[in-house]
Amino acid sequence: QVQLVESGGGLVQPGGSLRLSCAASEFTLDYYAIGWFRQAPGNEREGVACVRSRDGSTYYSDSVKGRFTLTRDNAKNTIFLQMNNLNAEDTAVYYCAARTYYSGNYRGPDVYNYWGQGTQVTVSS
Image (tube, rainbow, N blue to C red; front, side, top):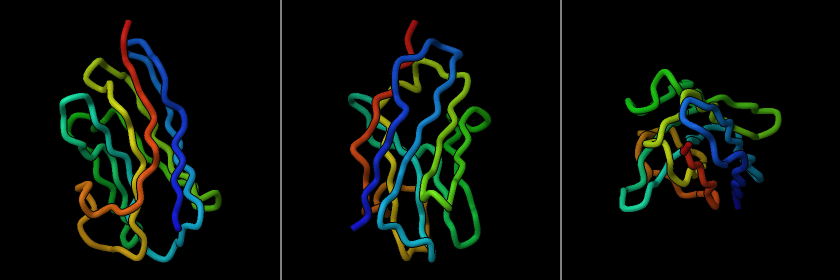
């Protein structure tokens, strides 16, 4: 059973930076999709940044492209989301999600079957 544990959320001022971490236990490295999603109050859960191991394809939503970067440390089964130039619209609960033995469409939340508990990111002055 894959377990995902996020960390690194918090309160930051507009223009600031945060780095989120997601540690995955019992995780196979054969082929998988893993990424970050977020959900603000009253909004649907949306994909922020995802990666597919089969070909290394990485997806970023238009709203974060150029500001957020997803990286992986395969040796530690951990992924990171570096978030720069944050603004109030980035305020949300951020979730790490994964699907193992998978090489299909990886952008939408519906394909993921493992989820972390979420970490709150609040951007406010």
